[in-house]
Length: 323
Ligand code: AVI
Image (tube, rainbow, N blue to C red; front, side):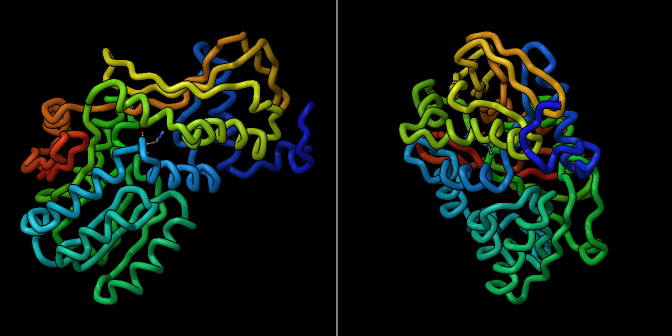
């Protein structure tokens, strides 16, 4: 076997998460066209690079969503019943959730994330700054069914899914996620969700092709992760970042393009790349207000309010569970 990480000399020693990663990566790189799931971007280095992306001048979504939440926080608070439990799908920087917690009187906050480390950092700071708030972290993959803590069973529920993370799901996955969230949060629940909007191609292109090259490093990090965790021998300088807007499918596509004919090996498997061949690493779907409302309607939710910035770059919606 031709692996160059000594820790991987005995492949049966891979832990469950790494084995699942290995299986998925080997399966998807053996297909044509090759692809990798965007969920693998977010190891420690990838999460740090993503935080850098959020403050890039070209990457408008984060600052625009924050501005909407700041400006419309009062209106959002009016919709939320007192003593509700706020359930955030995914954990990361707490800037956005703090804007909701400051304006509305939530009794409890339930961050749900697969990464225990993120949950710990997020939870410690919020407990310190919101001493009245009960915080119940749940370590789970929020795209699959999970149980809410017993302590929030009798509270009204409000879901929170900011950042247009929904855009990284395929339309069918987005529907499944919204349906699942409706089931987990229960009858009468509400949801506050951030969704990026379709706009001119230049703005979209620049947001995923920043001049400083941070998005390129974020994209390439997934190959570095394969090298680190699976003992791969990807030569990062032999791949280039490409992000394009596919208007027909309303999505930014990120790819890693092989600059030459090459072979890459890990875990005893060899992969052939032709010059110009792509690994499709991410889709970031952009919605219109109407297309998002239709998606929500088809997934057990009704849009009760939608807010955008003046330039209609980004949208935040308040949904109510139907039925
Ligand atoms: C997390 N997600 C909403 C980001 C996006 O815009 O699709 C991930 C990202 N990919 C490249 N830049 C940012």
